[in-house]
Image (cartoon, rainbow, N blue to C red; front, side, top):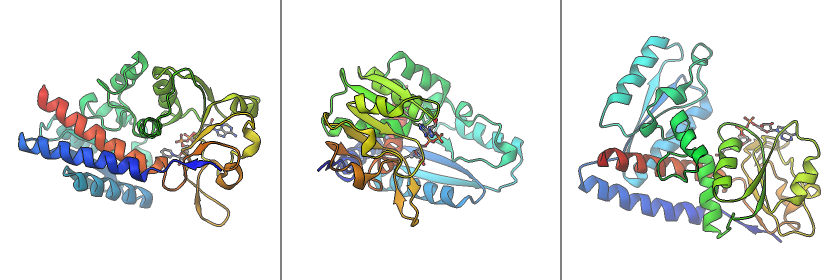
Length: 288
Ligand code: NAD
């Protein structure tokens, strides 16, 4: 039976550390301050931003959600981002996606200056990641960073391991492949055009599923000879409307060594990483 690697104890430890760091920064006159730009009333975005604000306030940081109307003019939207980018009291800034159609062409990752880019999508942060940075200089994308924290907590050393990452998105698969490469894993990045996916996953020590297809990975993707570690990034709903990941937890639980659950796994770590990025951004801006 697989061990479940849950986020709760890991996130609690990080929350405690962040609370202490915020308190120390406040004593030095710097309260980490995050601004979130929310355009329109897209229901999941309203929930995500509310959760992020609650998390930041819980660790002692400040967070304001700046709500803009769905039909906000492009000029006005850009003006607000520019003002916040230049405001020395603001340490972190991001635009909650998706944006309405008329703003969709804007590459928001490039609008926010790299030192305030707590989402970790600015070209300069991604370049540092390509160069081998593990978060000392760059602000790292939150979901990949959260996965690395989970592996670290579970004492899983990536050095020399064969990892298969399924999914090549900019927010998960690609940056995670780089982070794992920087940690000396041998990474195979698979996607919808990969031929012989099962052959790849059966050779892996660690499999990361970031596909967006409910319960796609079952025991037929695994090797009975290996103690494989399975990281489930997917957030989907099954045929009964129940939240589930990309991995069929019930089916694989007898066939792998360790598994992250959905819910209660990677999803919870993404917001924790955002908190870590905000505190790191505030510290670095205070020191410069
Ligand atoms: P995406 O839609 O941008 O990318 C999906 C990837 O899966 C693509 O690269 C595609 O090539 C690959 N894929 C699709 N079908 C495949 C197949 N049959 N075989 C192999 N590869 C296939 O998705 P994303 O934004 O990276 O998100 C992936 C999943 O992770 C979604 O369920 C999303 O909701 C979830 N997610 C979770 C978090 C979190 O915090 N836990 C964060 C981001 C995304």
